[in-house]
Amino acid sequence: MKVYAGRTFLYPDGGIPHLWIVVTEPFGAPPEVAIVSISSDRPGKDATVKLAPGDHPFIRKPSVVFYADTRLMPVHVIESEVRNAQADFHADCSEDLLERVRQGLLASPATPRRMKEYVRGRI
Image (cartoon, rainbow, N blue to C red; front, side):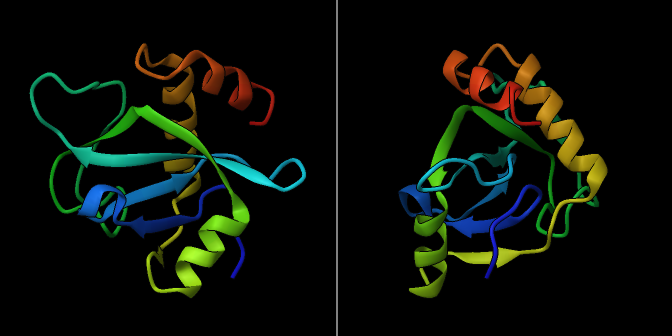
């Protein structure tokens, strides 16, 4: 059970399971990773990176990366949530998808500035 850039997991943040993508390799003590979630594409949502069925096995309808909720998460929390069946690892991202998500994180006006600074030095 390893956490690394490009790993994805389903996590019911707020009750509804969303796909989360690990954007950075673990860093620090304790190690943390930057993560972003995927959300349905609807009017008014940040459209910096749009996703379609086929971009990832979990994506079955037009979606977007929800950069406004980019966060740091300790690796041990992700591992614990998976171990306790509160989250489930899913198929890894392709290299292309991970790169699109990373570049979008830096480009999106919705990404919190501190998250851009954190990720900029780690991708």
